[in-house]
Structures are given as C-alpha cells and as structure tokens.
Image (tube, rainbow, N blue to C red):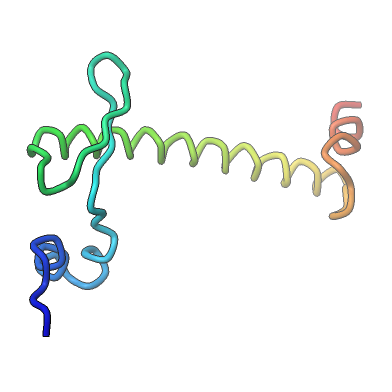
Length: 96
C-alpha cells in the first residue's frame, strides 16, 4: 500500500470533517492587491493568515448578496408576487 502524502497526513491530523476541506493551495491578496496562489505546504503561517482574511472577505460578500436576495424574495411575497413572476414584474409591483 502507498504511504500517505504529507498533505494527506496533515488532513488526517485535522480530523475527517476539517481535513477534507484543507486544500493543497491557498490564495490571498498581497499588499498591492494581486491575487497570490501558492502550494499550502510552501506557505508561511503569515500567508495562511492572509488567506484566512481573503476567505473572510469572500464569505462576507456572499453573505451580503444572499441577504439581498432573501430580502427581495420576502418583499415580493409580502406584495403578493408569485413564483413565476420575473424580477422585472416584481420591481414594478413593489415600487408602486
């Protein structure tokens, strides 16, 4: 049997759920705004922290977009719109 790679061993050390989400590369923005991607095993701990900050910003952006869509959906339903209505029709209805 083939022995696990260093990355696989690290994944196992983190546990089944967390380890399976540990990617082989990280991405972060450098101080100039450039996107940097590098292999996880070559990254410094500071670069891991930068990757965490980048993921937090992405997560916050996704949350804001989801929240906006949720608010639109609620507003439409409160104004009697139905599932087959387009957002254009909904906009006309809710902005009267």
